[in-house]
Image 1 (cartoon, rainbow, N blue to C red):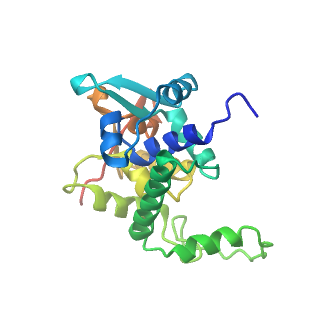
Image 2 (image 1 turned 90 degrees about the vertical axis):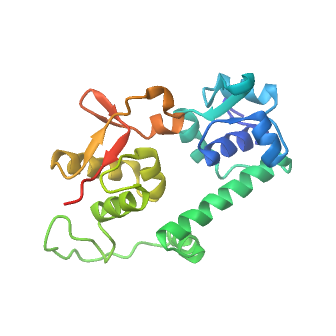
Length: 228
């Protein structure tokens, strides 16, 4: 076993923090899930730079996943979860996030499970058919630009209001990060969208920082699409 390998309890805590997506204290975890992050687990995850801890109101310790933690959590999803309360909380939160994703994307559970089994099937060659434009959807699927605009409309509190890229990425979680990043860069260059940095960096969570897009010499945390 690698020295960096996570134990089931550590894996469960990391998945809980990523599924929550916001800093959380032990009292909050105790109230909601009836468990707390034990010191050995916290120190190990901190040592691996997978979580960070800061002192909050009433001197409570608030924990959240780091950008490395978010990447590691994706790798840990197939891993074993303990039968303890952290394991149950992780399973419940992941199931809740999956349910929300299916609802947002108007998908059925069957769509995901069938797609997963289809990955093992032998690919069938398909002749390429020219499209009428570079942005034309392939195989009837909605273009990335259309999905970006649709997700923004759902998330924005008002037309032209800023939306965190972390929320946009969560809404479009099925898209590979590079695919979404390339489209955001293209739309920004074409002045179809505005990508701006968050001026109050202290208000950003680790998830918000991890979701930023580097343009020029700045990390952009927010997207704005003007109506017109």
